Image (cartoon, rainbow, N blue to C red; front, side, top):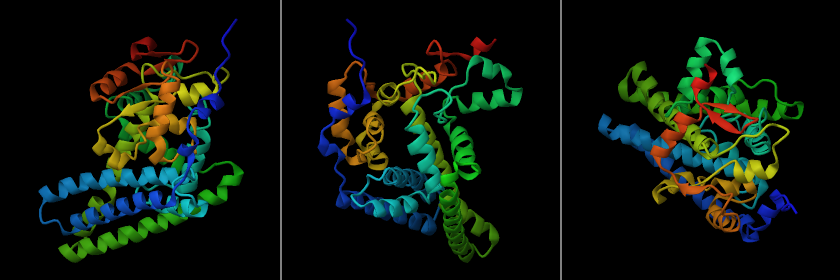
Length: 345
C-alpha cells in the first residue's frame, strides 16, 4: 500500500498558530531601528571627511537598504504589523531606497513567485534554461547567461531580469493590476527625483560644482542600490538554486514540492540577521506567507522537526555556493537534473 501524498496543508498545520500572530509594536520597532540606522549612515556619508570613512559607510548603506527591503517585503505580504493599511503604507515607503515599485513587486513576488515556486515556465526568478534553449541562443545571449549564472553574477541577473524587465520596463501586467502599478511607478519616480534633487543640492553646496552634486547622488543612492541589488539577487539564488533543489515541469509540479522542497533553511551568522531579518530561514516563509519574519526561527524549527528528510537545513558556506554555481547551469526538467554547459555541445 502506497503512503499518502503529503499536502501543503499538512506542512502548514505543524507550524504553531503563534507563528502567524502579527505584532504592530514589534514590526514598528524593526522599521524604526532600520530607518534610524539608514538616516545615520546617509548623514555620515554626507559629512564624511575622507574616502576611507565613506567606503565602509557606503557598504553599510547597501546592507541597510537590504534590511529595509526585507521589512518592505513582509509589509507587502501583509504580515509586518497587525494593521493592513499600515502594512500597505510601510511597504510603499520601505521599497523606495531599493527603487522597487510596490504593486509590481506584489504581483511578481507574492502572486507569481510564491504561487509557482520552482515551476517550469511560471516562476520567473532564476528560471533555468534547457539545453535546447541554450543552443538556440546567439553568442551574446550565451555570454550574458554565463556571466549572470557565474559565481557573483547576481547583480547583473537581478538588475536586468527582475528589476528592469519585471519592475521598471514592465508594461503589460494583467488588466486589474495596471492602474496600481502605474500609480506606484509615478510615486516611486517622484520620491526618487525628490531624493536625488536633495542629494544633488547638498553635494553642489559642499563642492561648488556639478561633479560634486553628481557624486553625492551616486554615493547616497546609486551605489547602495547596486550593492543591494547584488545582495538580493544572491539571496534569492541561494534560496532556490542548488544541486539538491529540483525544478518541476508545469504538469509535474505540486504546491508542496514548490514550497517545501523548492527552498532552503540557511544558517547565517547572527550579526547578518540584523540586516536580513531571518529571511534566510526561507522554507517556512514559502510554506506559509502569513508568518512574519520575526517568527521564522520558531516556524523553521517546527518544520524541520516534522519533516527532517524533506527540509534542506544547513549552514550557508560560500564555498558550497561557488561549487553549486559551477554546477547549476542548464536544466533537464523531465529528468529533474542540473547540467553543465558542455551538455549543449
